[in-house]
Length: 333
Image (tube, rainbow, N blue to C red; front, side, top):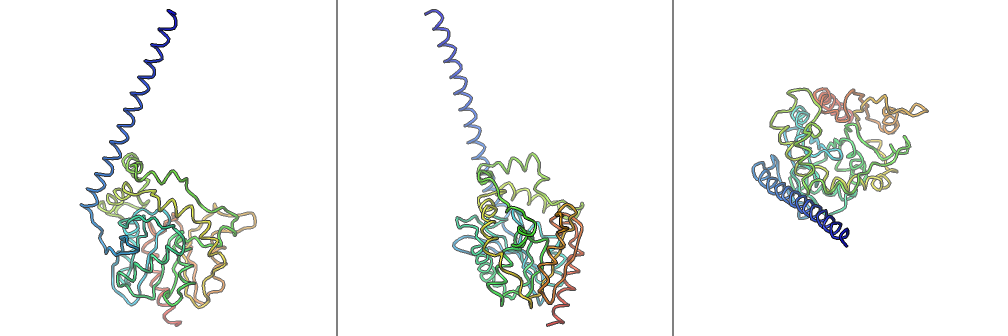
């Protein structure tokens, strides 16, 4: 009996320490999440959207435009580009010297709300169309998608050809790429959708802010731009819409893989030269894009060195190519 009492006391002590530790951790987590939501609300009130907020399906969507011109170029972001209006800013400023340039921030991005609707290609395209219409931005548009938005632009151009004057791809993903390179569709772990609401992305933005910022030369982006990008990353980096979009990619590709650019649609693609993406039979990023442009009468492929976000460092050269391409297809028409 004398040996049992000390054992019970020892177990009770361990239980109390464990319980108290769990309680302290829970209090810290709840306090952090409450702080995150409170400071996010304050930051949003201090930093309103620079463009126009329009209603789409009962939610707010941000449409940002600059410049004047005969043509309207609509910039569409890649997967997980947290703040598209800020990410495109240097490129947008350059192109707005000769054109009207518009950034549509999809739900879950930038200053736009999040939505409960699935991130299907049909929903994404209809939301973009509605946002442009409600912002009184008239087409036909020159769609300029980056990365995965190439899939949405392919669908847009096939479903609504009268609304699309041309496609200018910025190292775009196209539906046929997975078969061409024998690769799986991208995906994200579902638990990542909790990063934004629990403040994990805010913590990451404090610890390692550079991972959320453009890899560009000093002075390309203003200090204000970079600070705002970090803030928006803290608000909504890796939110449920981004995760849903990534995990719906395989299905969106399946819906569009039989689509192609119409022969009479002017198409230009900026392609990152990738020496790492070569299969045993010599297939490269450039040979893939060439295969996609083979049926287009007015087409052009522009190889560029740089990051997947080519506009971070090549925005001036890209803007020059865009203006010349527009001149070319105008003369041909």
